[in-house]
Length: 115
Image (cartoon, rainbow, N blue to C red):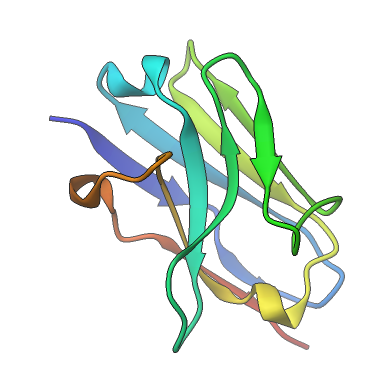
Protein backbone atom coordinates (compact mmCIF):
# COMPACT_ATOMS: atom_id res chain seq x y z
CA UNK A 1 0.00 0.00 0.00
CA UNK A 2 1.38 3.39 -0.98
CA UNK A 3 1.76 5.92 1.83
CA UNK A 4 2.98 9.51 1.93
CA UNK A 5 4.21 11.15 5.13
CA UNK A 6 4.97 14.85 5.37
CA UNK A 7 7.32 16.45 7.89
CA UNK A 8 9.24 19.64 8.55
CA UNK A 9 6.52 22.17 9.27
CA UNK A 10 6.58 24.63 12.13
CA UNK A 11 6.34 28.24 13.22
CA UNK A 12 8.60 30.72 11.48
CA UNK A 13 8.81 34.50 11.30
CA UNK A 14 8.10 36.35 8.07
CA UNK A 15 11.16 36.24 5.86
CA UNK A 16 12.31 32.97 7.35
CA UNK A 17 12.80 29.55 5.79
CA UNK A 18 11.56 26.01 6.25
CA UNK A 19 12.24 22.75 4.47
CA UNK A 20 9.46 20.22 4.12
CA UNK A 21 10.02 16.57 3.36
CA UNK A 22 7.78 13.87 1.95
CA UNK A 23 8.61 10.21 2.37
CA UNK A 24 6.85 7.84 0.02
CA UNK A 25 6.61 4.10 -0.09
CA UNK A 26 5.76 2.07 -3.12
CA UNK A 27 6.62 2.19 -6.77
CA UNK A 28 4.28 5.06 -7.57
CA UNK A 29 6.94 7.59 -6.60
CA UNK A 30 9.38 6.44 -9.24
CA UNK A 31 7.02 6.87 -12.17
CA UNK A 32 4.72 9.73 -11.27
CA UNK A 33 4.91 13.44 -11.07
CA UNK A 34 4.73 14.49 -7.43
CA UNK A 35 3.49 17.67 -5.93
CA UNK A 36 3.22 19.78 -2.81
CA UNK A 37 -0.20 21.18 -2.02
CA UNK A 38 -1.45 23.45 0.71
CA UNK A 39 -4.72 24.37 2.30
CA UNK A 40 -5.21 27.51 4.34
CA UNK A 41 -8.20 27.93 6.67
CA UNK A 42 -11.31 28.69 4.65
CA UNK A 43 -9.61 27.94 1.34
CA UNK A 44 -9.49 25.00 -1.01
CA UNK A 45 -6.42 22.88 -1.49
CA UNK A 46 -4.04 24.29 -4.09
CA UNK A 47 -0.98 23.00 -5.90
CA UNK A 48 2.13 24.82 -4.75
CA UNK A 49 4.82 23.03 -6.74
CA UNK A 50 5.25 19.84 -8.72
CA UNK A 51 8.12 17.82 -10.12
CA UNK A 52 8.15 15.06 -12.70
CA UNK A 53 10.15 11.86 -12.42
CA UNK A 54 12.67 13.48 -14.79
CA UNK A 55 12.98 16.62 -12.67
CA UNK A 56 10.89 19.14 -14.57
CA UNK A 57 9.24 21.56 -12.17
CA UNK A 58 6.34 23.95 -12.02
CA UNK A 59 5.28 26.43 -9.36
CA UNK A 60 2.27 28.45 -8.38
CA UNK A 61 2.79 32.12 -9.23
CA UNK A 62 2.56 33.03 -5.56
CA UNK A 63 5.68 31.03 -4.67
CA UNK A 64 7.85 31.40 -7.76
CA UNK A 65 11.33 32.54 -6.85
CA UNK A 66 10.83 31.67 -3.17
CA UNK A 67 10.12 27.93 -3.11
CA UNK A 68 12.13 25.12 -4.64
CA UNK A 69 10.97 21.54 -5.09
CA UNK A 70 13.31 18.57 -5.39
CA UNK A 71 13.13 14.81 -5.27
CA UNK A 72 15.44 11.87 -4.74
CA UNK A 73 14.17 8.84 -6.60
CA UNK A 74 16.73 6.57 -4.93
CA UNK A 75 15.69 7.58 -1.40
CA UNK A 76 12.05 7.95 -2.39
CA UNK A 77 11.77 11.43 -0.90
CA UNK A 78 10.62 14.83 -2.06
CA UNK A 79 11.46 18.15 -0.46
CA UNK A 80 10.14 21.68 -0.59
CA UNK A 81 12.57 24.42 0.34
CA UNK A 82 10.60 27.50 1.32
CA UNK A 83 12.42 30.81 1.59
CA UNK A 84 11.26 34.36 2.27
CA UNK A 85 8.11 33.03 3.83
CA UNK A 86 5.09 35.30 4.10
CA UNK A 87 2.10 35.18 6.46
CA UNK A 88 -0.06 34.17 3.49
CA UNK A 89 2.01 31.00 3.17
CA UNK A 90 0.42 29.80 6.41
CA UNK A 91 -1.37 26.53 5.66
CA UNK A 92 -1.28 22.79 6.07
CA UNK A 93 1.07 21.39 3.44
CA UNK A 94 0.52 17.98 1.83
CA UNK A 95 2.35 15.88 -0.70
CA UNK A 96 0.62 13.77 -3.31
CA UNK A 97 1.04 12.81 -6.93
CA UNK A 98 0.18 15.32 -9.65
CA UNK A 99 -2.71 15.22 -10.36
CA UNK A 100 -3.58 14.04 -6.85
CA UNK A 101 -5.07 10.70 -5.87
CA UNK A 102 -7.74 11.15 -3.18
CA UNK A 103 -6.59 8.03 -1.35
CA UNK A 104 -3.04 9.38 -0.95
CA UNK A 105 -3.83 12.45 1.13
CA UNK A 106 -1.99 12.21 4.44
CA UNK A 107 -2.14 14.28 7.61
CA UNK A 108 -0.04 17.07 6.19
CA UNK A 109 2.33 19.32 8.08
CA UNK A 110 1.39 22.72 9.50
CA UNK A 111 3.35 25.77 8.42
CA UNK A 112 2.67 28.97 10.33
CA UNK A 113 4.32 32.22 9.34
CA UNK A 114 3.85 34.81 12.03
CA UNK A 115 5.79 37.34 14.04
